[in-house]
Length: 61
Image 1 (cartoon, rainbow, N blue to C red):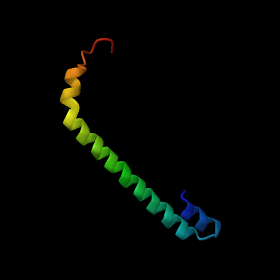
Image 2: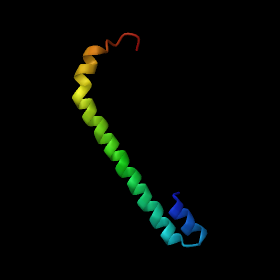
Image 3: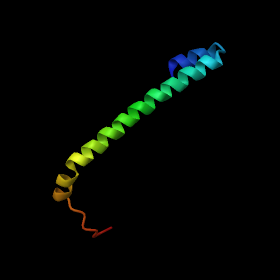
């Protein structure tokens, strides 16, 4: 729970606390989505190069 949500919870303002928590979670999910998209773009850009340097032979799996 973020500080804003915690403060509202302490004051018994549960609707405001839930609102803060919900917004904070939305920010977290947006950041997670941006990181996911960046990782996918990076993989698409470099995957062939990496696979050439480190081929997967299936041995030892």
